[in-house]
Length: 99
View 1 (cartoon, one colour):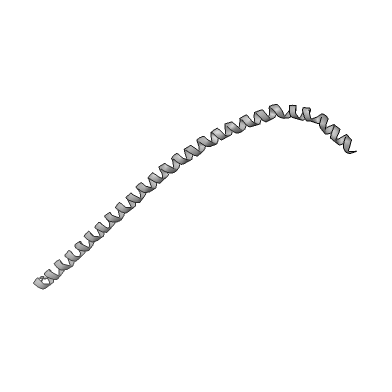
View 2 (cartoon, one colour):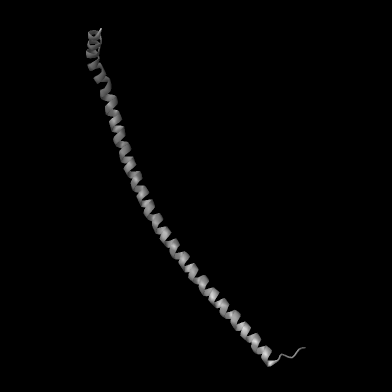
């Protein structure tokens, strides 16, 4: 239909090359951004692994502390009534002497 003039053909080719170069630069920037995101994700995963290990350690220490508290509670329940009975006569004496 229309004949393309050599100057117009050159301009169209230059515009096409410019667009291709811009697209290539954008693709490189996107790839670099993706790499940075992947690296940050890897670091985040490593931190989460360390946090999980620390949480497991705290859970184990809490379990051990719970076992110690149960032992203390059993000893208290065992010896407290006897202590109260042993001390109650002296409590009565102290109450009577203050009257």
